[in-house]
Length: 348
Image 1: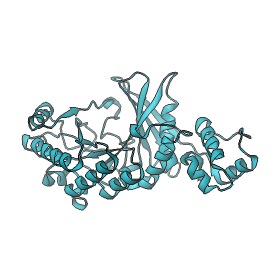
Image 2: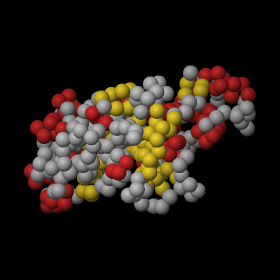
Image 3: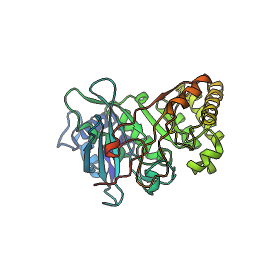
């Protein structure tokens, strides 16, 4: 059976040929708004609706925890897997934006992650499974249900649990639903897909979702350091990832976001800052746009081997001295383990 809430109208019309595209738009709209299919929908033929009922289901995720930070307006939701109940939980974070009433949703694309980045709690879990497209969409719908009157989801960032590029078929399918005007109607330019560095996925994102933004977690601009933090460097060297980012920028015209987490005594020296600045300038010369560099403080988690750098300001100042600017990202909700790198679906 097809999960209706993971289908855009165009995909529904392709998979259930008894349904016209105009009918598919109305059916998807009702399903995503109400979570159900009524007996009848205006301007939808009964035969079309019955064909959808025969081919599709509307599954639901169980919200097993909903935590609110005591220090800022972030909230975290944990979901139970319908396939492996209790064994493959995953999380999403409700992020307040600067404009009142607007929120972004940080969604997971996998339960766990196979890439084992040393500064990320999710990487300690290993890969449990890929999430289905409807499970990604449902994370956004679940957050929407927590909002009050006049509040709305403005954007989505694929930076929760998992490596989105390793589940790209389902991520792209979910993006179809998230951006479709008859579905969740979120502007594609307000979505960002983040990666640890899978070049083929970066290129495919550019080709198939050219209005969606790219985020890249670097770890270090020095290969020998990056390799100790991110095993993916062995299979996908830094330069190959940069080439893919250049391709993405040229195809889309969008500046990528480069995320960098300084770790005390590991990758936070002036030499590290100068290497990152040099990489950014080289990228800009080839891509025609400058990367938006986001410095993210390290957030501690159980079993980590690092400490937050005390040189964040000095690191950024060194880059600025090289002509490369960055911003220090506020990473909220550390008290409920909802900050960047902390998601591990551990329930108290």
